[in-house]
Amino acid sequence: MINEAEAGSVIHLENKTYHGKGSVIKIDKDIDIYGADSSGTILDAKFQSKIFKISKNSKVNICAITFVNGYADNNGGAIESNGILTVKDSIFINNH
Image (cartoon, rainbow, N blue to C red):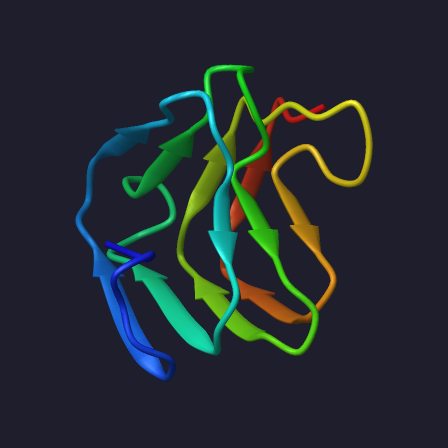
């Protein structure tokens, strides 16, 4: 979904838990990602990877998402950002 989106897109995630597949989602464009509600829109990396890696010169806005069980040996358990990142009304739980 995010990989296929065009720059400037707005992504709306459903109120459900999305489980990671063991690899980080790389974001290399300007994009907005909105959950339905931070208590119900959950991204769970299952301690297999970080969730997002945002590239330099990318502007990303994230709102109303819970990030859980992200894992990285360096640079962000849930999110690694080298771009411009704004996070609002979101929750981070058990990330390393």
